[in-house]
Image (tube, rainbow, N blue to C red):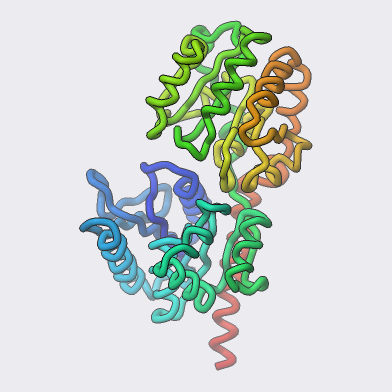
Length: 385
C-alpha cells in the first residue's frame, strides 16, 4: 500500500493548531492501514525517530540561526523524502513555510504528488506573509508551479490563494477536524468543581498573544461583573502577554475573578467545567479551541474573523461579536449568565454542528479520498506517458 509523508515545522509534543491537525490526520490514516511518516524539526530532548500511534515521526537535525536553521531542516527533510522514496506517493505539507518548500522541491525531483495546506488568512496568514519578502515570493512561485493541490480552510484563504495566481481547480476546501466524542464525554474534575462551585465559568483556551485580543475580554469582563458578579474567567494557556494581562487584571481590580491556569496537557476538564467559551481574536485561522468548545456542547462567543463565521454557521450555533467592542462583549456575557436556557440551546446547536461537519471521521475520510485521487491521477499519467 502506498504511503503518505507529512511535513510540518513543529509536531507533538509541541502543541499548536497545525500540530494538532497533523497528529490527528496521521493517526487517522494509520488506523486505516496507511503507512504514514511525519517529518518535523528536532528540538532538544526529542528523539530523531520514534513510533507514535501507528506512524513514524522523523526529526532531522537543524542548526544555526534563523534562515540557516530553516535551510538545514529543508535539506534534512528532503534527505528523508529521498530515502523513503519507494514507500510513498503523496507528500502533505502543513503550512506554507519550510515544510512546503521542501515538499515542492521533492515533487520536482522525486515525481511525487504534493498537497500543501494553508492554515490562516489575513495580515498574519501564510499568503500575506509570503507576499512581503523575496523568499516568500519564491515559495509562492514554486507553489503555483509544482503543488498538485492546495488545501484551504475557508473561502477567505481560497480567495487569497487565487489572488496570487493559484489555479482555482487546484484548490480544495477541507476543514480542520476533531474527535468529537473525546471532548463531549470528558470526565469532570472534582477538585475544579469544588473550587469554582456556584460560579458561571467563562473559558478561554489559547496562547496569550496580542492576536487573541484578550485585553478586550478583560475590559468586557470587568463591566459584565457589575451585573453578573457570579462570573469567573479562566484563561488556559501561556504566552508573552501574560504579565501584561495579569497587570491589567489588577488595574481593573478583577484579579480575584480571573484564574490564569497556564498550559494544560488535557483541557477537557476545563471544557467540562465551562458555561461559556470565548474567542475574542482580532485574527484567526480555524481555531481548534473553538471546535473543541463546540464539541463539548458549550455556547461559544467569537469574532467574525478567519473561519469562525463558517464554523459557527454564521451565528446559527454560536454568537459572533465585533472585534474589540468591549460594551457588546460585556452585555453578551451578562445576558448569557442570566439565561441558562439560551446557553443550553446554543451549546446543543454547536455540538450538532461539530458532529455533522467537523468530526474527524468526516474530515479524515475527505483526506483519504483526496490522497487516493492524487495517486490514481499519478498512475493514469504514467500510463499515458
